Length: 68
Image (cartoon, rainbow, N blue to C red; front, side, top):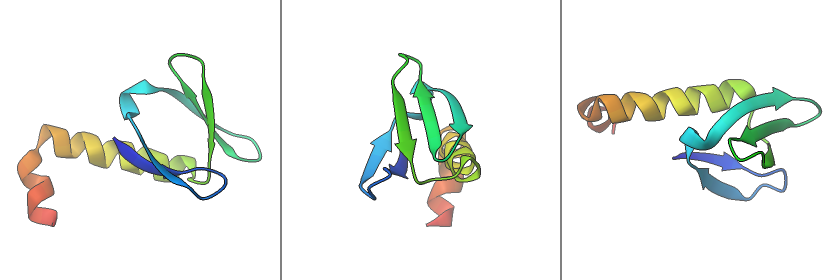
């Protein structure tokens, strides 16, 4: 799960395995595998880094513990 912010600033957690694609128009738009779209404040670069950091933590849980 990654933490993101809606356009209104409300934080929420998203299961990153549900992300189909991320686009940028005026806002960052996340399309989920079920076709639903979410508009968020986070940039595509931030989303990419959050997903990669989450997956690194899953693949190597000891690395994540040492960072805390």
